[in-house]
Amino acid sequence: MLGKLMKHELNATLRLLAPLYIALLFMSLINRFIFQLNIQEGILMFFTGILMFVQIVLIFAILIATVLIMIIRFYKNLLSDEGYLMFTLPVNTHQLIISKLVITLFWLIISIVIVLSSLSITFLTADNAGLIINEIKNIPDRLSVTFGDNSLTLVIELILMILVGAVSNIMIVYASIAIGQLFSKHKILASIISYVVIYNALQIILLIAIVILSFIVTGNINFTNVLPQMFFPIIIAITLLTGLGFYMITNGIFEKKLNLE
Amino acid sequence: MNPILECKSLTKIYSGFTALSDVNLTLERGRIIGLLGPNGSGKTTLLKLINGLLVPDSGSIQIEGKKPGVETKRIVSYLPEKTYLADWMKVSQVVEFFHDFYENFNPKKAYDMLTDLKIDPEKHLNTLSKGTKEKVQLILVMSREADLYCLDEPIGGVDPASRDYILNTIINNYNENATVLISTHLIADIEKVLDEVIFLKDGSVTLHSSVDDIRVAESKSIDSLFREVFKC
Amino acid sequence: MQWNIDSERPVYIQLIEQIQAGIVSGYFNPGDKLPSVRELAAEAGVNPNTMQRALAELEQTELVYTNRTSGRFITSDIGIIKKLKKQSANNIIVEFIEKMKQIGYQEDDILECITKILEEMRK
Figure 1 (tube, rainbow over the protein chains, first blue to last red):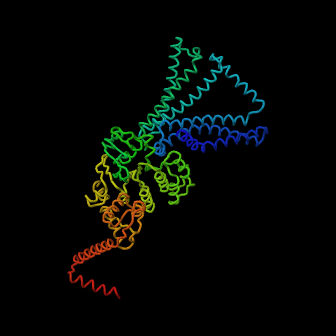
Figure 2: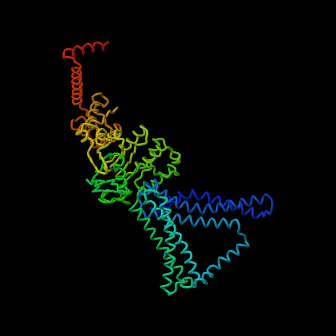
Figure 3: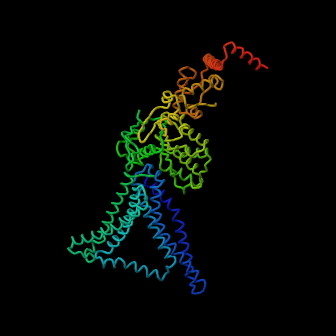
């Protein structure tokens, strides 16, 4: 069932993002050729400017669209009239939430890949490719210097932190939408307020947690010097817990407090 | 005889407003039952509770002995009053969707009915009129071989010829194991098809009886009785 | 067949009456196979359980019988059908006489009236 939900989710969202992806990649190819022509003056320069502008707009459009689609899709498919269909399917609330979570994460990753590809297509040459690869190779070592510990471990922790962070953030959005649904009036306003409150509260809590932990471990509240090895893992753990917490809130609301109009 | 639906002291309250109050109800299999009552009497609330879209505040509700959940959703087929299909899909895609998620869905039956009602499966839902969309939804719901069908105003926005077709479909779909629960205002059109009726008033069941018993006892149609009982 | 079911009286009684009328009028011939309960119910626009009840009663009065393997049939017994026809005719006549009396006709007048009209119809 989960697979079927994900397949359906993919179908429903693909038709929205695919055109943007194709447009961007197409634009990137055009701009690559334009750059190779190396036009320096005249009216043509004006055109190259516009084409570059279009590419940048498309990049922003894709990033914004990915986030908007995630939010709108969750609300429309589960909490508007379509909810009558989704919540009477022989699936449980976990499957409904997870299918959307996974596919949203998928599109976030794909969108970033597409944007990076677009920039590579337009700008990457044999020359600067070498420079970029070198910079990337340096990252693990730089991390090692700042945070101590094995550079491979740090890279893994960094990737994990980004993924867990993404999942947790998505869950905060979903939970805010679900909380908004609890109100009979001004649901959207309630969702937005929930999100703002939760997000800011989390920032504060995270800060306090890190300060307290560093104090406990080393008697020192200046955490940037202290516990470099623990920094990433602590953040990963806290983020994971918050993600889980909001998942349970969302699931709980769907199971016990659903009230479709 | 194992009843398909059992409600015991079922109560549902929305912030101060009691939608259903201490409802006791047993529905046997193989019946076509009318759920009748004015707007706000609790009909839709009851249907939502049966389908797990609401959770009771007190009391219990069981379909085939089980609480509403994944298992009951397999055997209950629900037609809400709303248009609940995604507009961007084609009719054929929605049929495919139902086929995917419901084991007891019969695609051939669905396509036959679409043909009878002259609905083109390749059309996108957002190009269809409201009435046609409602027909598509009804076709999907009736093409499932379920044990309990919950139909909320199935003939409301539909022309008389289609109304006949729909009632005809409900009759033809009949089997001794399954029960059809129809919630409606249009009593006159539907009463010849009903075995039993339930009158719901302000969240309570005021009558649950076979149609013939009522006609014999009151010497009038259900429609007339309804007008009397629910006079404004 | 045109089914005319109203909602004021129990449906199964009306179904019995209309099937009987069908037999008497010759719409249903002796020994005819009847469609399935569901088909008949759909045709009449009524609940299958109600149609089943009507057919069960007709079986009691032997107008209809069920062969377990091949289905339901109208009786081939001409005698029973004749009796039904006679019963129907009697009902019509009784109803007619009562209606005539309601508009003021006496028994002799009624007979006279019938004879005259029958003559006119022959022409």
